[in-house]
Structures are given as C-alpha cells and as structure tokens.
Amino acid sequence: MAKHFGISTRTIYRWMEALSISGVPVYSTKGRGGGIAISEKYTLDKTLLSEEEKLAIVSSVKALNALTSNGETANSAIKTLEKISGFTKTDTDWLEVDFEPWSSEGNEVSKIFGTLREGILKKQQVSFDYYSGDGRIESRVVHPWKLVYKGQSWYLYGWCTSRNTERFFKLTRMRNLILTSRNATITKDYINSKKSVEKPDAGKVLYSQQKPSLIKITAKISPQKIPYLLDAFICSEVIPQDDGSVVATFSVPDFEWIYERLLGFGADIKILSPESVKEKIIKQAESVLKIYGYHSHD
Image 1 (cartoon, rainbow, N blue to C red):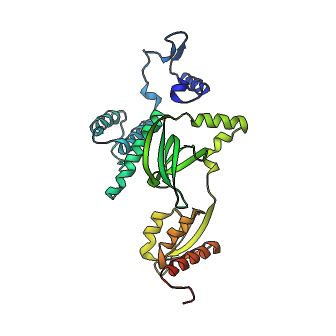
Image 2 (cartoon, rainbow, N blue to C red; image 1 turned 30 degrees about the vertical axis):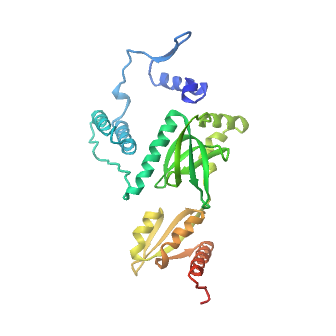
C-alpha cells in the first residue's frame, strides 16, 4: 500500500491510528490476501460533521468540478453535485466558481491543469519547456506533487530533476507539456523523511524556504488607475486624497518583474518610498526612452 500511494509505511500506520481514534473500525489481516480494511457493517455517522463542515465539503467539490470537468464528465459531475448538495440543509447555491479565462487563448491553462492532475494522481513524471524569470526557456522534467493556487495564479509544486530540488512552476509559463511513461518515484514524503534525518524539522519548512524578501512600497495613484492597482496588489492601506487620488501601501517580492509592472502604470503612479524602488523605476524608464532614441538629458 505504501508503494502504491508513494508514501512511507509509517504514514500508513499514522492514517490507521487517526481513523481508529475517530471511531472508524479499521483493522489489518496478515498472510496471503490480507491487508487493511474497514468493517463492512460500518456506516458514516452524519453527526460526525457539523453543518459548516458539510457545506465546506460541497463548496470544495464545486470548485474542483469547475477546474476538472470537460464535455464528457460535465453531466456526471452535475449529478454528483446534486447528490452531495442534499448532504447539507444549508443553501449550497451561494458559491459559483468559474476559472474560464476572458480570452479563448487562456483555455490552454485548463488543458495543462488537466494533464498535470493526471500526472499527480497516476504518479508519472511530466516534461515541459519553461520560461524562467530571466527570460530563458529551459526543458524541465518534474516529479509532480501537487497543484497550488497562490496569488491569483496556478503553480505546479514538485521535484525538479534539472535543479535536483523542489520547485514551483507557473502554469502559464509552460509549453509543450508531456505526460511521460516514467514513474514519479521522488515523493514529498520521501524528501521530508530524508531531510528530517539530515536536519530535524527541515521537512516542515519547504514553503518558507522559498519565500522571497518583501519590499513595502508607498505610492500615489491617479483616480483612473486606482481599480487596476487594487487588482494588481494587495494594499494594506489606502488613503484618499483631496484631488481624488489615493496613497496606497503594499508589500511585493523583490523581483524584477515588479518594477516592470509598476512602470506599466506610466504617469498615473508616483512612488513615494522607498528610494531604492524609485531609482529602479527611473532607470527602467530611461532604458525605454533610449529604445526610441531619447536620453534623460534631452
């Protein structure tokens, strides 16, 4: 079973213990044909879940259905939703999830999502061409672990054989994705157990190890660009000004593309602090002017 799910034997025993503690009659049998099973007479007691927990399950299934359903499975998914909606007394029609892009070109991300989902569930390696942050395109082979939705974007989280470490890959930057016939043998549990031996508790901080340093920016934005700034950044403070503009404060990772995005606001944004961000914006603006034959002293 551990081999089938790509996890350690210890994890299997932890699952059994958790089920047993929660009141589920789980047992194991030895010998040929043996294994782990739940008593056939056992039925799930609906009182084990609160109304809020039941609603959370239904909402999660709706969100997953919006991502994974296609023409062939849509009808089946609708029937399943109808069944589980009766699982709770609360109105389940309060949430609708639609990940369809405004542009038809964005449908490619849905296809990528489906292929990666298949690779994760079937435990197969995936290969693709990837546009890295510095503009280079590189071929990558990954043991896929999970799909992560963060900061309005989908990422693949897995073990990159090129870098020999865990990595996040943005789905919109992938091209020529292929589901290989090779088994994904490097699992997250394996990496965590290996790290815990080399350095105790190291496996518990996989995500925090990759968190970039943040810069706190304060900027003044013209009225017509306020909605776009709020779409682009999570502002901790927005102070209206007498002229209709706002002074906003937000934290962003210290990446080059952040300055390019800020420059995209043109003359509708003025960076108030810090000085280092103002200097980088000015340098990038001067580089743009040089492309068209203008210089800062002109």
